[in-house]
Image (tube, rainbow, N blue to C red):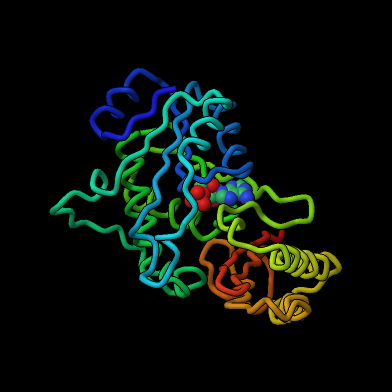
Length: 276
Ligand code: AMP
């Protein structure tokens, strides 16, 4: 396994592979990340993982400084998975003095995570664009856990004619339904218990949908009611949106994306489920 932090060197290493799968991450790896690595292995001759806590996708009052990091542990997990290449750039490598280009998907900034986290998706789109251009993978793998991110990346690749296939893999969950996230490490024992309410709320709404309910307002209310059963959980948004435009729906005809962001103390959690 080659671990490389310089752009020129990683491009040279990449040149020795024909089909390459790229899994972009911010590190502090868990089974969700590793499921993307395994899928990449099945579909590509070689697998690259990037580990980069991208400063530009964090807002000024967000958790960039305290985001969990453990490079040694991450590298041993990736070594055990048989990963070929790990790209571990420093911020100064990605954003050198004089850097001045941003990829902006204006519509994404108006809804869901984009509206709740100003500037987040220009940070994401810009860094993913750079990682794709640096490593030029055959396929790049993203988790459904970050539903709007998958929509943003797909649209960027389409709009800018980037010749990379984007693959989206299912959300990996704990046995009690909590979606795996590097940020789960912030939760204390009590909050960890309460955090299962996100999945319970999504399940309750999907069960109502399965019994024929097609009113988005009713499904939002179902989710809000379940979330309210955990007083420690403060909903930031609860959404039933079109899976492509991410605009809020009134009636569901062609499927929907259920999604939510909540706060548990100082910890912010998101989760989602696709209907139909
Ligand atoms: P992150 O390190 O949080 O930026 O995540 C890197 C990639 O792993 C993103 O494409 C995430 O959507 C994906 N990912 C994170 N958590 C999960 C999960 N629980 N299941 C599947 N994919 C995930």
